[in-house]
Amino acid sequence: MQEEAVLRAKAEEKINKGTLPKRVADRLWGGPGVGEPCAVCEQPVAKAEIEFEVQFAKDGGGPLDVFHVHTRCYALWELVRTDGAGADDERSESPR
Ligand SMILES: [Zn+2]
Figure 1 (cartoon, rainbow, N blue to C red):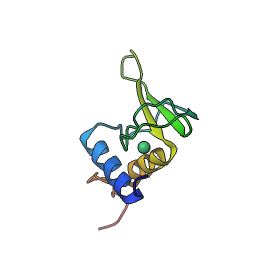
Figure 2: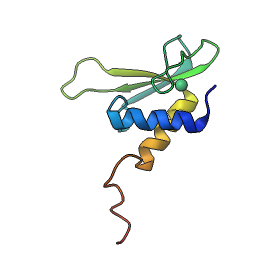
Figure 3: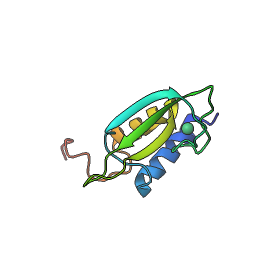
Figure 4: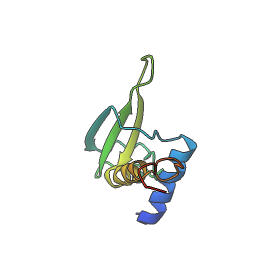
């Protein structure tokens, strides 16, 4: 188990690099792990754990982009994504 702050930093880095999408998933499946490495923390999701399979449709169709993540890692990914972390221009609502 890794610390939440570490995982959050990883999620942030991956979103900034474009490794993880910064948009709402098109499909989300929950279920037991299949041993695939987590897209956030890179640790395999063990069969005894619950994973989310997060799918993103590509523009113009084709196969979906699929990410396996721990439920906890997904929560952090969501947190970073909706937090506007790493984005410079998402504070337009705050007055100057
Ligand atoms: Zn993970």
